[in-house]
Length: 260
Image 1: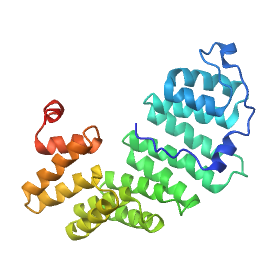
Image 2: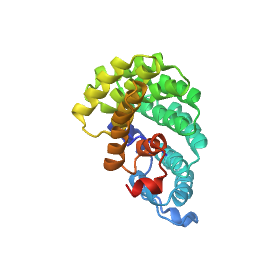
Image 3: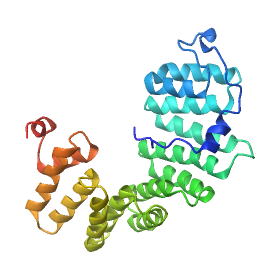
């Protein structure tokens, strides 16, 4: 699962905690006691199945939006991305009218991220676009929508969103690496190389940047340089998703790579 580490703006947390907080969930047969939203989310990270059961009991007892969000997060932690995304979308539109746009947008963006996890980029695009309309200055939402665009081959649209994200947050190495990839897919290697150079200047040994620079070097006929980047990636970030891709390009199995 690739849920973003940013869960909420403070306003969203406040919106979710307006409901009654205290509930002894075990009184309804749940194996854990949910006392408030924070305790529910803690159980999500430890035992999502128990968290789901407790959150549903909390919702029945009047837990409100906090209980609904916790239940959706438990479903996501269990790998049920579609149902979790549907529940978050419903929650986003059910939040009170007084909820700040940025807070509602965060919930929609979370739902969009889950559709990306479910490999449904078109659905992700729709929700992320709705989120961006509400919070147009959020750089992370632009990155997420760019990933949805890239997944359907809309690389030029991805470049537009990533460029906007970089303007909002010039220090975002992730946005630079993703834009480099989009530039490469649209036949613009010089611009891609510039973005990778900027990313590595800010974050030396960035796994995504090393992977992408290797691809650019291979595309340019520099097999030695490409292999050097991928070997460096395996050395510094052996357990990363990028390392898995590097192993494929190097023709190594994970076990073989560990023996390097």
